[in-house]
Length: 129
Image (cartoon, rainbow, N blue to C red; front, top):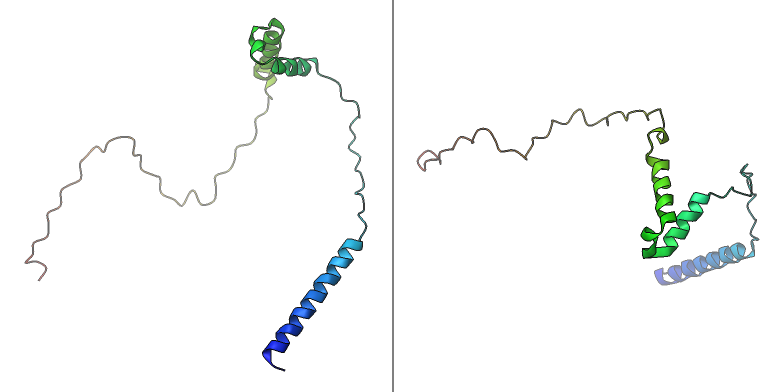
């Protein structure tokens, strides 16, 4: 067999395998994934503050002049920024990365150097010979 015939035979085999794989994949039936129980209730309680904030958002530029929107925004700020709103426990500190200790500390470039570098004399031409 010469090279051309072998290449043609390989191409025909490749096309046949591709068509077979396509036919098998197309004949498969889709199986619906089983629903996992989430434990959540289907009815979520409505948050009147959220509803009011959505209404204020829909007002656009008239929102800052609406007293109900001003109250809703103040209550929303208090919800997240009040002293008791933050968790009492702090997250654990992240350990330093393993490669950080091997690197030398970087020099600060935001302040001028305290001493000017010593000037270096140019080499004499006779010294190089």
